[in-house]
Length: 178
Image 1 (cartoon, helix red, strand yellow):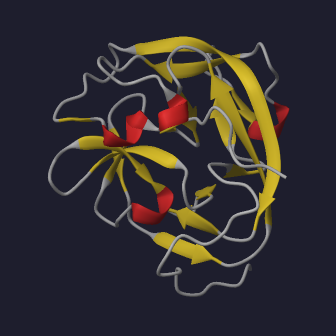
Image 2: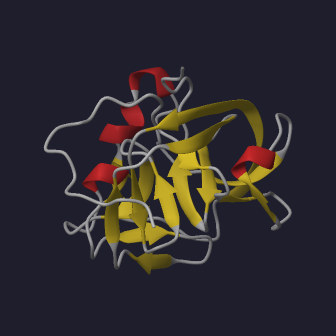
């Protein structure tokens, strides 16, 4: 079992950011799943077309976007994988004993103020809801893990959103990588 400790009080310096642990299941456009490290440029993944979501990843403007309502099921689309990234990070968060992500990775979450927004893993809270293809799942546990992990991330054309371990997340154009 990886060592755990209290999360840092400020953003720790990553060797890579905005990524998932190798082995994270990505939902493909046909409904099958692949480990994130097995996804290839040109593959099509399940994505979400969110009206008014900024698409300028360089400015991370998606982090200031929010909405009170999302129509699940109606905006599901397929999107092409444009880039792949690999790296390592010295710590991560384990959400619901299933999803292992680096501290900055943005999840589509419904917060306590009932707004939907992209929330970095380090800012997720027990009781928030994550968006799935068919509705939501509640965050029941979040564990900070202080151990090096191998990571990967995808860049998705047009929508910037993909499904990791059954929940919608945002990608990054150019994550910090070694």
